[in-house]
Amino acid sequence: MAIKPRPGKEAVTTKGWLRANKWLILRRMSQFGILGLFLLGPLAGIWIVKGNLAYSMTLDVLPLSDPHILLQAVLAGVEPHKEALIGVSIVIVFYMLIGGRVFCSWVCPVNLVTDLSCCVRRMLGIRSSTQLSRSARYWLLGVTLILPLITGAIVWEMFNPVSMAFRGLVFGLGMAWVILLGIFLFDIFVAKEGWCGRLCPVGAFYSLLGWKSLVRVVAEDREKCDDCMDCFEVCPEEQVIRPALKGAAQGIGPVILSSNCTNCGRCIDVCPEDVFHFGSRFSNQRLNIETIESSRKQDSLSDAA
Image (cartoon, rainbow, N blue to C red; front, top):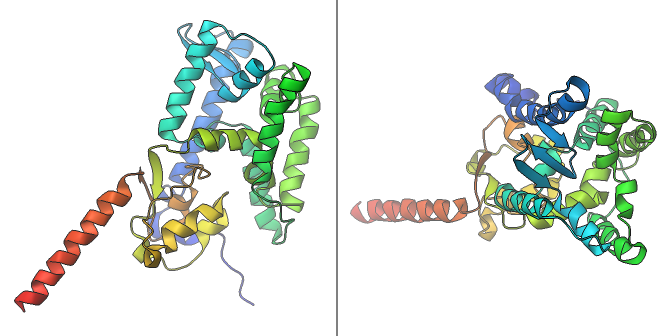
């Protein structure tokens, strides 16, 4: 039985290493850059950004607030101050335009752990996994919003791996090591993309926030697809690809419209045929117009003949 090449290997051969890893490199620069800005203050005394991922102030001018955490605080009976409301408004508008799950792939430090899990899982050749429903994350999201109403406290933040990872980097990992190690092993041995793709309520919240976001991955050249399946192999939400990639016969456009797409660019990187590109949710309309015009030209040529 032939061993399937590592996803993206053909893309490296076809496009070169840099183009085949462009979006991965940019994501890592974003993730480490954001963490670096937060750590410059406590570690080097350079306070470009003060605070944490829940609430921060950049250059003492720009407030940014996590809307999920602020919503929990309000439900717990906390009255938010003006800067928090301004900060949450900025964040909501940004993710509504760019895509809510961009937080998961471009900002969240836990993504570094889960990406590593996927690499290890692939190296070990582990294929089977426990079938956890992807809707479980939405049920857990509901729990994170009900608990503040019952307890009057932001209970989820005591266990939130994102918050724990950040606090651990600044003050020493402590208990965060256990949580992050648990996620790492869970994703390897129990369920592929188990945490980010099936359980994380933060990701569920941001998917709802970016439901109608403008920036989308587009399978603009889907007719070039050679069914290598590399995009499905590396996508943390592989169910979002099929409608855009294989839906031409059903009249489905090439834009990945699912709010669960993380806009990570993995599918763009690993595709040797350059099927995928970043575009907008309106690309369906543009491509449909181009298809109609092309069809009309062909009909005109046929009539002339």
